[in-house]
Length: 97
Image (tube, rainbow, N blue to C red; front, side):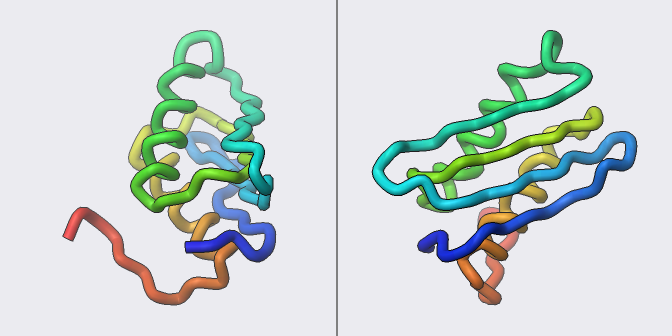
């Protein structure tokens, strides 16, 4: 999958997260995290994002994250959605099938 545009997913509601994905040609993955629970869970949030991007085969993106206490499964779903939107992809393959 190739990132074409900017993709966003999520809300600023409690227990959710806003993820914005955009191209970062040949510069790797850069994650900019803003979270009220960064001191406690910042490493885990970053790990979920990195792992999800790896599963999708995405390697050169900027990820802006505004977290409001989202669970790992929510973060993963928002990253997947933002990537699909940024790639203009309508062929979704959710889960590990």
